[in-house]
Image (cartoon, rainbow, N blue to C red; front, side):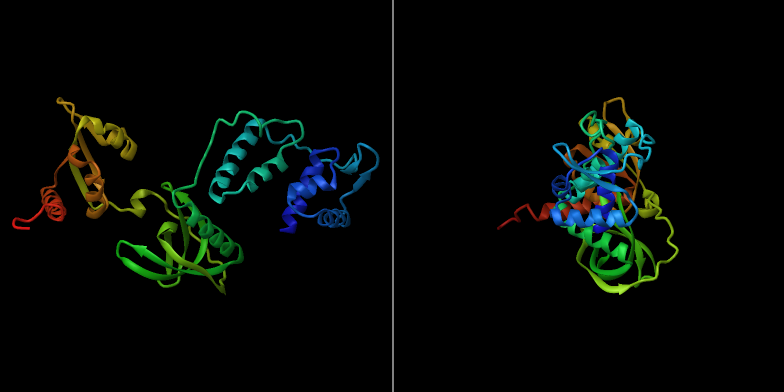
Length: 306
């Protein structure tokens, strides 16, 4: 957008004594003619941009027209950089890196040194997520309703929402919006969305409640289970639920106690451990799990006579 480019050009000129139109054209990926028009626009806005002739000539801002750029410390800039680069990992571009370069004052090396924090928010679904994120982000800016097919445990439904927030949480991307069909705010996981598109229908922004993102609110508990795991599964339990979810017994096995959300998710999780786990209770859930295993086994065990 032109306004973004104008701000970017101004940032460069404030941080450098002078630069050239070709360099600006290359940096912002536009033609030199476009840069010249942008410089005229900045001049018209009252910013005293001057041209210097000679071997070291170029474009600059009048000497006394400066702002203090020391408000951000090196640590501040590093923290901002880490956040901006994490957004680049989602978009697959380097536009946020370029934004950081505009903010970094001349002579400071935060961008080149000490990058000891690396955040990658991309996923296996990056090729399909990026267009969804861009579409939703544009819809939020335009205040435009979007529609999509949504695949949930209870079935498939067609939804129309007023999008308000893009959220990265629980290692996944979500959109928080007002669902027209349910007349309430809902959280939708982007990987479960298909055929998403803008409707062209604008909405009047509502008073939006902050999404309550605690696991207990989004995934309410339906009961407590107890299971025993082989010692070699300690790392999985630590990774999934932390150290407090189990107690080591005298024989080295791990007694696991935790709340579960729904039986389908619970059974799938337990099966991922193979024979390294035994579900102890509640007894009713244990029997259902045994039946679940039997049905799976029947698909692979040859029946007598076949």
